[in-house]
Length: 326
Image (cartoon, rainbow, N blue to C red; front, side):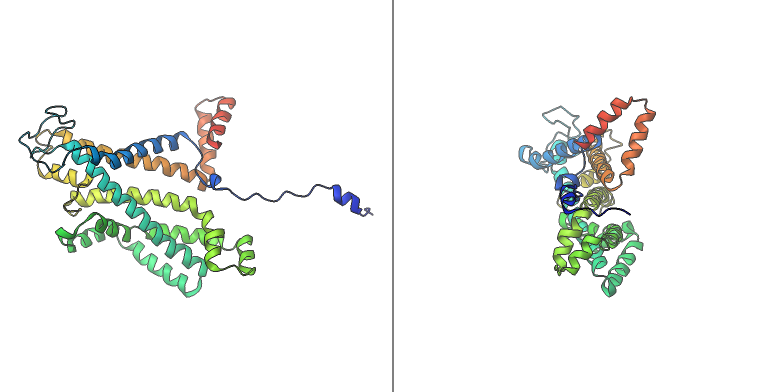
């Protein structure tokens, strides 16, 4: 027979530590080379989009210096067929594309949260209705729908925010499906059930208990929505369905194509805007990869296996892992 534990023995016995709450810093992506490079490139482009239009000239100013090569006649990136400064157009075009990208990211994230998180938590007929509507939007081809909507919008009404709304309304369904699946898993956990039993209000359970666990997923979807928006806007503008009376990187490519910049050898007109789109898309992809490492810890393990294939010593692998944790 085992002897009973006295009260004095119970007093000196160590108690099991309580699980620590996840801080906001733990929800953020860990520092990694991909994250540093992605944030650096994106930061430079965003900074240029903010201050660039304040220091360059009028992008619509026409001059007699047609098809000037970069660096001549005071034009850093040359001029267009009508003598407009390409450097000024790219400054304004970068701002326009980023406005569309951020607008689509915000609108898509809000819509996916409403149809994914709210419906999955409440359940019942609301969840089935939201899921049915999400599936209908998801099976509709996005690009043809955007083209059809763009054709029905008058040319003089195609502003930046209207193009952003059109792109957001056709690109939120996939994110809503992902958020719904994650929410269905989170709402059955013990701490959510305890909050529900204790009488917590629905909005507080959603904001305090469920939403912090979805921040990495929503951040990844926000970044992906920005990539989709910038590339989608460039495609629409190249087809002549972009924003009118506004400069974006897509409208610059459209004007260069219409004015035969390629046949004229004016590479400085279409290469820089395409390079900005590629660099910003690459930066957002690197940031997205860093966020994915939080959502799926197996990615960190696979990265460690790749380092071993590179022939790194155990000390070098530990050093790289410590740098990512910091």
